[in-house]
Image (cartoon, rainbow, N blue to C red; front, side, top):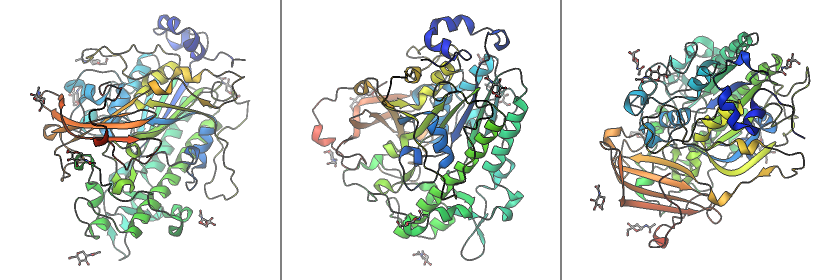
Length: 548
Ligand SMILES: *[C@@H]1O[C@H](CO)[C@@H](O)[C@H](O)[C@H]1NC(C)=O
Ligand SMILES: *[C@@H]1O[C@H](CO)[C@@H](O)[C@H](O)[C@H]1NC(C)=O
Ligand SMILES: *[C@@H]1O[C@H](CO)[C@@H](O)[C@H](O)[C@H]1NC(C)=O
Ligand SMILES: *[C@@H]1O[C@H](CO)[C@@H](O)[C@H](O)[C@H]1NC(C)=O
Ligand SMILES: *[C@@H]1O[C@H](CO)[C@@H](O)[C@H](O)[C@H]1NC(C)=O
Ligand SMILES: *[C@@H]1O[C@H](CO)[C@@H](O)[C@H](O)[C@H]1NC(C)=O
Ligand SMILES: *[C@@H]1O[C@H](CO)[C@@H](O)[C@H](O)[C@H]1NC(C)=O
């Protein structure tokens, strides 16, 4: 039995080609109501969540979302740093096409006038709205979050975000510092609130407004935590007693790690509390008790984030919008918490490229809620009696964050943009990512919640630039002109393979004949990626191309 036909979703799945003739129709002219979209983008969130099997993390609200969603277990970002990743997945193009590897250019003038996910929805009759950090602020979105192209109304930024990097963290000395670890008493901080709380409130206000709208909406909500500094309500620390916090299972810099692959986590070193540790550059290490504190604050920030997601989703429920709204949840990239002796993002390892990715589609990933039924009641993470949620459907196949554009378009019943030609700088609307719609075709007879396509054919591509072969002050975030080496990385179900090759930033040319270093990690025997087998396989051919 198939779920009842709602909106264009079902049409899009069965009659993909028919939708192209419908795409120009105004939503009001369609036989059924189109689905709304709520896109939640979290900053620097690796899949340290209950629904991804993490036993320590309290994330009951995100787990509840997962229980009604299709969750992708193996989703990877295309570059593990904010602006390049966001511009990539929001335009549906790889960093080599957006030509954004740093923070310093706006793709429309620098690479091509590429359409974005919200722009596409806007052009198809949606009211599109941005709350919090969706595009990376600054040059990379023309200081306007790509307004007016992407958004129907001016993007909202929480007023308290300006305090994120100021001295608002009470240290053991009683003074205020710009620390990395920043549990706060919310009543005490400037404005008495935090950015993510304000974003949740604004998003709920917009949902209330949209309740009576005749047009469908596309609301993107970008949360700031768990990005550093770890500035979060201090009560969340109680969920993670220090004595229960373990170190990363592989806290040493591996012997076989090429220096070019290592990121020296400069942004962490610059915080006042970390500076006081007098760490040696570039390899540290951070004292183990401080490592535990970083992990504790990251996890506490995740639980705080979870409460914001919970408030937002329960409001959606209360407004009876859960039967007409697709919810997509993801992050711009992962974050190392001491694995390989590394912290932060800025690398090609799984721990920094792997992201949570899940989609709730009413009537498809879960039955339509009955009138008055609550799918997303708020769950208090402090409630010891709150049940662990049953996982929903899961897909194990490797997918790329790039898939978000075609997949959201398809799920909403819009025409899925065509595949990009190569090169595609002159094409405003096309996609470099896979359309994941096939994973949403469920059958009642299907007992196995784990879905597979042809896992051995699937590849996720990521890349990371470096200014030099050894770690230096700008290795994490080189400006375009300083890029000398590009690490191109492929992840298959069996291995991660990375080559660091000469890169010419004037011509945007990578020279694959000029390999500076290589990495090969086997997934089965070395899931944490600590044993580089590259030299052992030199001369042997790997079956897959390094260029997408
Ligand atoms: C870029 O795309 C936008 C949105 O479609 C359009 O308004 C604008 O005119 C385009 N700019 C150029 C230079 O083609
Ligand atoms: C970027 O913003 C500036 C200032 O608002 C504006 O003049 C310019 O047209 C924008 N660029 C594009 C491509 O829209
Ligand atoms: C900490 O670990 C102890 C021992 O395993 C366990 O009983 C306790 O519930 C844990 N506390 C939390 C908050 O997870
Ligand atoms: C691999 O070979 C290169 C070149 O001989 C050498 O510099 C590097 O240290 C080797 N790496 C490992 C992990 O043995
Ligand atoms: C760091 O260095 C300063 C100045 O040399 C010293 O006063 C301080 O005790 C050192 N801190 C640690 C944690 O070693
Ligand atoms: C969603 O549920 C509400 C309340 O039961 C109902 O009024 C509304 O028509 C439903 N919307 C859709 C699209 O089914
Ligand atoms: C690429 O690198 C190889 C090996 O160093 C070199 O011979 C060749 O000239 C380079 N190609 C370009 C276009 O720079």
